Image 1 (cartoon, helix red, strand yellow):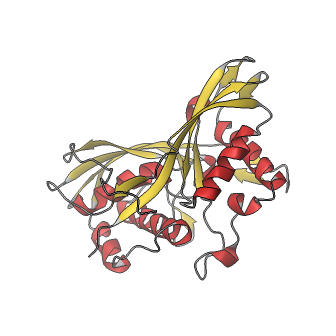
Image 2: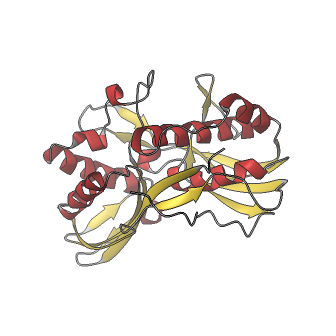
Image 3: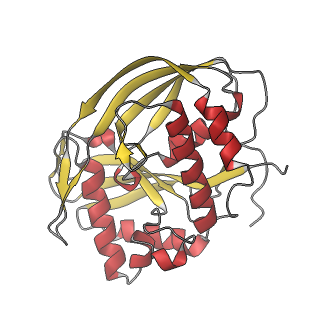
Length: 281
């Protein structure tokens, strides 16, 4: 099997506030996303903000956005005019013109001046192939509200089989839409192996939050579970996917900053999630 990978531009954007800015708890990523989307619409590039189902894989009603915001550290903060702040923005569309358009949109923000952009030189390439020492125990921290579904219903705990399947599907769909095509793995067997992983500890709690769309008037939940869970079993092949999910997020509404996770304890501590392969583009 060819080496598997996932690529993205891991941007860090630094701004200087043009006016006093307030980010009530749980709203920072959503407010920034809304401002970003408004400018893309003005630039007549709404396709980058709300991809059409016609352009995605067959049967996919709601294609994932080519980005996620990471701005939870701004929640609850108030910034004075002239104060600098930053957030991370993960961009999955490997076409360079689309990245340039996204950065242009941030330059046109009315609320803040873009003063620095890092991570634009070349995509970060993440290895998805398993290698190194076996991993039999792992802890995962769900850093922002996470909502996973199985059988059309939200699950109350992050069962590993569901978690791994949603990560697998998201990575494959993002690759199909924005990079080298779907994952070349046996999806069914991957899922079966994931179902054998046992959850040994679960310390999570639900967070309630919502947003109201200024365009449609609809109210959307921004809630989900946060906390930490531990798992045991033959986890070796899943570690690279979990590391990739740190960048992509998992579950519903990842574009708004939901579904951020991190590995907090792993026997494979020396694993480097970055491949050394050069970008062929």
